[in-house]
Image (cartoon, rainbow over all chains, first blue to last red; front, side, top):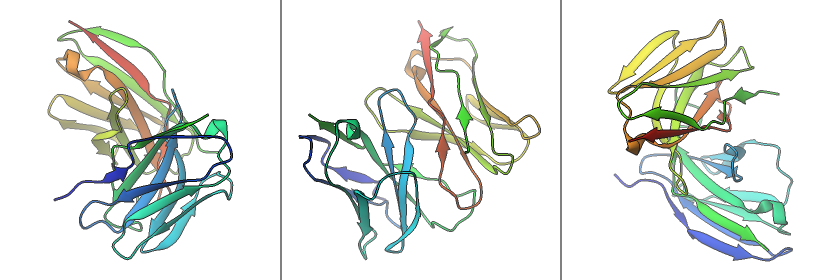
Length: 116
Length: 110
């Protein structure tokens, strides 16, 4: 069984640039959630994709966008990068986005983004 | 707004002692509660979850849930230096996303 993978591991960008982060879900999982974790904070929910459709969104501006592919892998795109976007971006997969409160999420290794 | 509160620590315990990590939450409708461990520079790793009031044990870890008090805790018995990490409490209701606390930093002193 393959776990959640993310790429790249590290990234440095400048203000105003655009970035794309990638995530491959764990085998058998059809749901991917993205989180942003700033230094010293807990992960903050960005959005979730279930079977290629957005299935919930947190309090993030529209310049944060994403998509999910038929193989359930996913991308997170951030436009017009700001300094505060510097964070660890985490992808988590789960077996079924509508599996109820007991469904667990498993995190990938994360992508550390630094915006200068 | 749903909130999850944790003492940021650091919580320092001697090797072999019991570490007690606490978490309170604001949403009375919360149904499931998760504990994740996060080593510095790494991603969160699921330790255990609990849904029902009472205790749930898994090896050296015990989760305790009291829904009336909106309180969940994690006990780590026989603490080891390798347990030194940040412990994140996460809460969920229905199909809503996980809401995380800021985490408690645990330091186990050899």
